[in-house]
Image 1: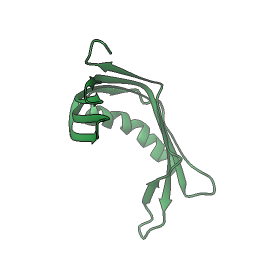
Image 2: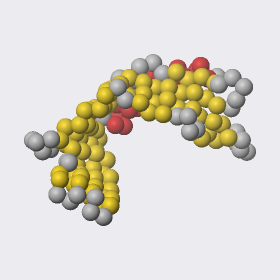
Image 3: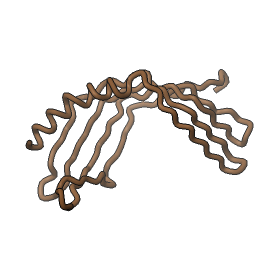
Image 4: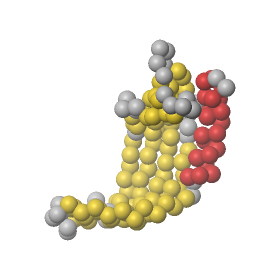
Length: 142
């Protein structure tokens, strides 16, 4: 299977798989982090209402290297958060939800030599960008 064929398969299956794996799903996180008197963060769960978009992706070999460049953009997500953040232990900064629009995953993947020849590593040049992030707060004052 060549790189163009793999790109076509990804273009078909990434949106379908994300619909079935992510939409209307809750992920239990149970994370807590404190930093003295500065902040107290507790995140119990994340509920993903919808993940949509997925503009045509780009998958290409980088000439002269063992690197594969994969770019997937146009991702929109509507997420609810179950948790709390308290700054200085008395300022509540609790978010109720997050709406992400036009997120792009831009990954550089390097094939590392191994006995099977199919081991890959995500390189440092990879990045995630956002068109916008809107945070809905639980407090009416924020």
